[in-house]
Image 1: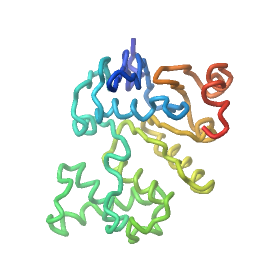
Image 2: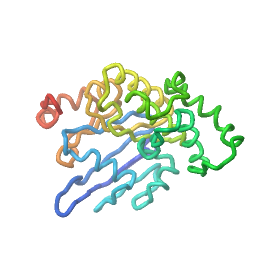
Image 3: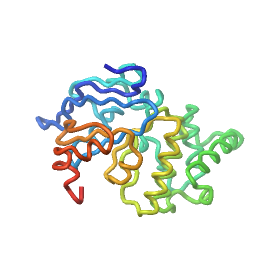
Image 4: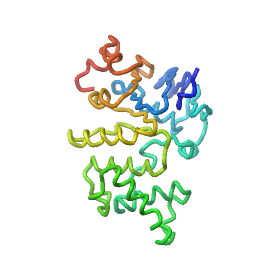
Length: 252
């Protein structure tokens, strides 16, 4: 049973697709103020789990609780308003807008006026100071007036995190935040995740085990839709079934 330190909990969370069980009886507990990693080989059910938590998919059965309140069946937008935000929900989807403009649009969404492009410049300018603070926080000051579509890949992910932070989430879900990045970008985004996690909870799906070992307080390993092991990196990395299912795969 969850206690007050638990911010997110699932009980017997299950998702079936026409007889195929993608996620089976997952009991997940994420503690407040931690970085919790969800790992496993391809096809383990990690992304399906994320989609269930934010209700982009509806569970076949099971329950989801956020801050002690059951959110099973809630709409994705309602879950986001509660403070549980998945990064791609408000990522930089406006490639022709600048970094500053993208973050201001995200801040408008926080105030309930997500796509009011016709609002006066005076109203938008009130958001500029907050937007600039977020842009500085994610290390994009030198790109503030650059079109989002022209940013290097790693910088786009930093912008995505900035637009997520614009919603002032209590808990962030990051889906493979370092996928496809250079070593330099991985280090930059890892440092950024650690920074933004200082006063919030982070749940992330991540394939890069170096990132997982460096950042994570707690790890849940999935295989074939079921929890294989849980614990810190030292614990799960020595688990025989984890070594067989995941860590033993050099290109997992």
